[in-house]
Image (cartoon, rainbow, N blue to C red; front, side):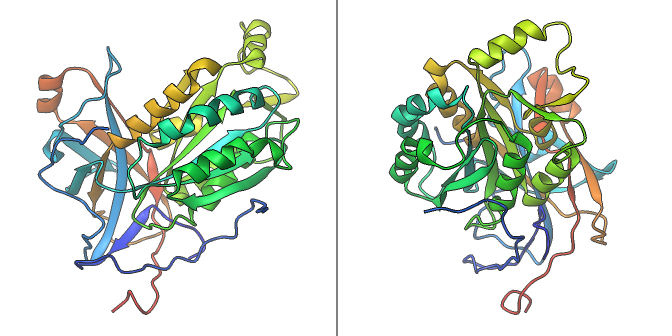
Length: 350
């Protein structure tokens, strides 16, 4: 199909059979924790159902402490699509593999941190499971694929160590293009059942002239289509401090330019943004990965039979009983998905 949808077709089988997707051509230039508690309904890569299953990720946080809330069950959640309550048919915590894209900002204010990241990235990446795959994309004024999806953690660290040799390093921070291209490339993840995360390592200081480049909606649509969640590891450097001084009373205001950040995309997809200075960037990256590992996966079969291609709003919250038991808990999840018709090849349409 023309666009990768978050709605995935699953079929009953003991082993995972290949599923072919027709992906849009990537715009990227290509050069040379701990185990979660058991759940009562387990969604694994070997489970397939003879209908359309909508899969979403969710994070549960204690509002006061910010700590992860583990051990929840499907019965603790209530899920709505376009205002209609849905039955949660599948549920797990850290039950599916991860496909992660590290989107590295190579603008002048962030590049000094790259060696710091390379020196400790292996330790952070070891938080991933064996079947979790990682890719690396660099961006500044342009985007470039540094390393395609791989299970080899040492190869990822090696490529990060040589990332300053890529041709795109320099002036400018085309954040929107970087996020869009990462979302498009996510369609090449090897596992069609994986949970998908784009981690943007950036100073979050990006400006562009009004009415030029991609719109926020265009970027968000590409991210939703890919089924990705966006997280931001915001490295606060000299540019971040300077901007705070000059824009303290009018954040983001400029008559000629617009401010671009990862924040709206993290909010729309249920991701999170963590700030860091250069001395703790690897510890914060490890924290982000730990948070990805503790997220819940929920699956439901939409009560709307027709895949009309429209955007469907999702609302996820704790039940009144769970709120009474757990207190004030924040649930982060994506705001919706596009209900695209699913096309299958002959090997999967029997």
